[in-house]
Length: 258
Image 1: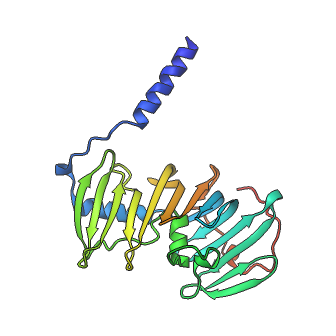
Image 2 (image 1 turned 45 degrees about the vertical axis):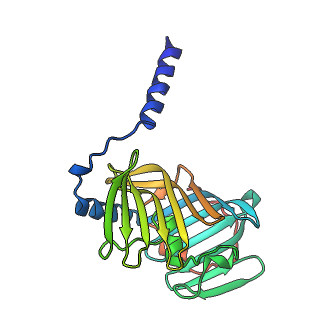
Image 3 (image 1 turned 60 degrees about the horizontal axis):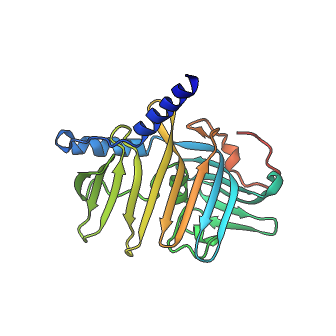
């Protein structure tokens, strides 16, 4: 009897998880959807925790654990961990300057103008600035479509509201929005040079006050992809000490448990 109850419970869970959400476009107020989507996109202000990172490209594939401490607007501390928890490399942004520290050297960049994520991955086909990287790690789109100056078309998918933003040059950006939380779950963003960036946000975690945070974030550009998987203990919208974003004097062993 107990086994039957467990089986029925699992069956119910998976049937609910995969069911199609009925969306009636005639009842949807587009300005309200846009405002709620914009508000939901900005609802995560800070993240602190451990994440598993995987980067794939035609040249190489990398997997590593990362200490991730991020706070809007441009505060960042990333520590790539080697085996046994030792920090192998570190990136720190204090909001103005960016410090890239390895056991062999230290590079200093003007945070908003000079730093580019391709410093680490030359095969990356687009530029990723500090602001883009902070947004991505906060579970946001690295670049938001222009909500105010684009023509917006609305349609529906199997479980999402689809918003297509058309600009005057014929470009199109598309967002797949959850009709209940108004969080973006998928996006296709066309850059100025025509390159398309695809983002996916999955495994949302409720963190209180109506805020949900995607614990899995994926970005793909052509044959390059980044996947970030946060551990369950990730802290969202908590106070973060400002001194964590100060230039670190040296690489140290990571011991604090999040």
